[in-house]
Length: 384
Image 1: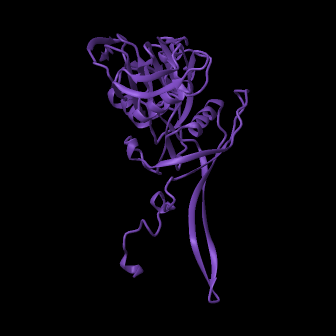
Image 2: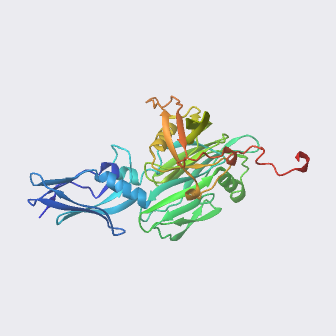
């Protein structure tokens, strides 16, 4: 009977999943990897033994590919070799790290950025994992400017201004009182749940003015925390022409909208033949690549650009669009052309990346243009 000789913790990041070694006196060993949550066989193969040992390599790649295809952030797996079985929970994390799954799972939002700038025109999404019996609503600290031009701070603990989404959580309403004025309901996760907060500059500013009656004319920043996770967003005026939704290192959607200048680079290639003294073109190959040069970015923002380049799934959002129907957005392929990441966190960085649609047919930029032009004007008889 085979014995799995590899140590597997009960919970581990996918980047830490080792090769699986089995010891057996038989000439071969049957390996199986099963998603026990959904009863799906992820991988199955019979491997020959050498010196009574058989090793299944690249297990982490197999499980990460499965989680990406199944659109899962984590799952419970069993590994069987012969008659020996070990079980573990795999948390998707695609980059090598010295931190453990327990250190990351409940202490961080599922983003690489603790502090970031975001434009006032985007709706963003922030994922996190809630423990069983923990409330899954945000506590927020706002810095805003009133009509007199003074900077003020306000704090609340409520989902007001946010769209709270969650999977596999059964919310239970519990009464709570905030100071002497406001009431809210705390949502309790009855089991570990992957949750997210959707919000925008406008939704939070409206909550300040309409719900809480504050004299707020401009929102400068918001600090969001839920039990142990914390992140700070600073709002600015830049309006990026193209914004990207991508699956980050945690395999959840994240918005990347850096201030940048984008240049379209169309390319047309063909072969030339001469027939009867007449030139003709054949084997035409048309393409269009978009080159994006960013403005100076912080150290953390460069880490986000790095994850964008590593991502297996990137979608682009057209100018003026602000949809959270991410599945409806077109896929793109991103390449990081020039990037340097200094260990000096006060040093700013610029980077250049290029992206293109997977379809070989070039896209019309007039579909994306937010300026007036001949394709945006209604028919006018005076031009007839």
